[in-house]
Image (cartoon, rainbow, N blue to C red; front, side, top):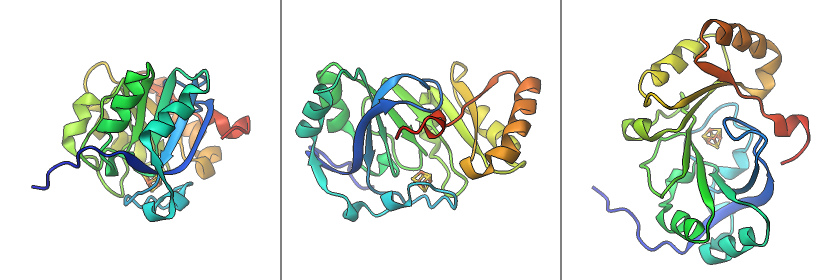
Length: 206
Ligand code: SF4
């Protein structure tokens, strides 16, 4: 077994920006996004393929990242990627929380959970399954619907998360015209699910 990395002071950052969260439970809320480089999941429909190679992205000091966030009015930081759990996030989340910021993550769950989180959005991917250990900790399960068979697949994960976990179905962006009507009908007959739309893409914010 490989020991977890310790005392990480730098992480590869593809981009970071203050915007509003466009998806899921916090849709519409102001959030500072930090998109880390590195992903080995390989979703065919990935819209951030430039994130995959971590070595293409500059290393940022965690301390500097936190002070940059603090220059804004942000109260919540979303750590995304790429697959952010390819990195040990203990130091980053510790520093953000010490600065009074809420920490949210968007992850496929395919790497071991690290970090201290106020909110975990688990978005499982067929291309690399989540590790079972993360499922009980998910506050939100967000399943991307790419084709009709994904509803049954979504239910396999819904049955494994904890009872309070919020459940979202989100159309894959390029399939939205076909999948959104199916999702609406599915939610009407399975009302434990809610619709998540990528509203940032409709209102043209990052
Ligand atoms: Fe892209 Fe996210 Fe899939 Fe990685 S997990 S390939 S970043 S959509």
